[in-house]
Length: 401
Image (cartoon, rainbow, N blue to C red; front, side):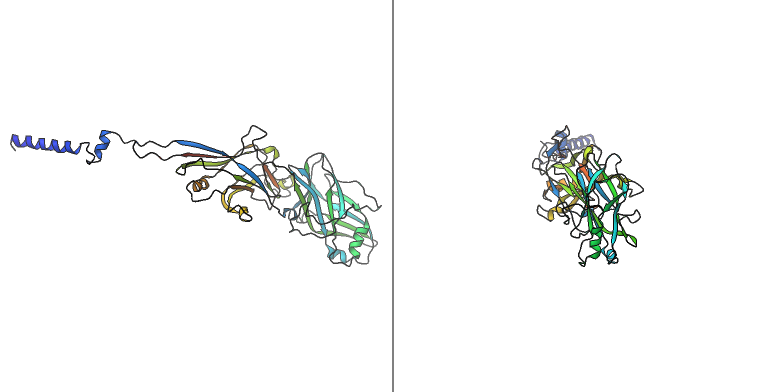
């Protein structure tokens, strides 16, 4: 190759490369990165906080008829004020024609406070009840207006203390049950809390469901015989304090309905984290009671099991069920900040695939155990009120500006 040919080749190659690296918009895309670096602007990150509106939902349950331990007393907003006792009428009918000389109600106290007594009254039930009923002070079966007298025809002062109790009742009560020709006659008694105690605490009594422990019994002495009538069914009637505190109950079944607004979050937001934030007020919480916690009785844990869901609608009964959002457990008598993840739920609302129907928090054992967790509403202390916290960012700007 002669010298002129080599020079021509090099010049041709130089002009080809120079043309390929021009800033012409129609030229190869690689040139845009040589003229200026392409740097999309990253989206900013935000923390969105919405203080929640809330309301209580009270439901009726029949926990009192299926408890292993009956209770009397008052603590943490629960007032166990009545124990209903139904005796086996079939057993009573076997003693027709016999005269009752003496009758004694025996109440075995399983566990209870040692520092105070409860004043109680004994009343005859005038109608039967079922363990499957949902009974409250307002729906309790009718009872006599006056207390049952003792064998002397007087009403003694009757109390419950931290040891087994015996109460003498007038023999005419049992005699009327035996002599009755009415098959529907109620053979039952009501043990009623007569006044609010000075101290807080529960006395726990063996239920008929706890066959090994020995439930309440009625000892009857006839002129020529003695027998003990067993309990056919029993029921603890409990009420809750009439308050507007921010609390979830098991047993009394109080749920909390939270409402919130996500209008301040752009529908193009990328959600990084979202939580329902509550502050537990341990001073007002109730886990397992003493007898339930005791290993030789039930050995139940003191933790509070909860369930968080978004209701299917705003009307009954769809409001009482819905898609689960989160569940867990914690100690209700310890104060701390509780954070419940909401990630998938919030993401679905933001992208429009789900309607914001709020959130409902409930005890996951509300039909089984009497428990309570109290939350701060932010009004009376330094703790923050219930809120939703969302960490999100906006998509990057890909316009290259």
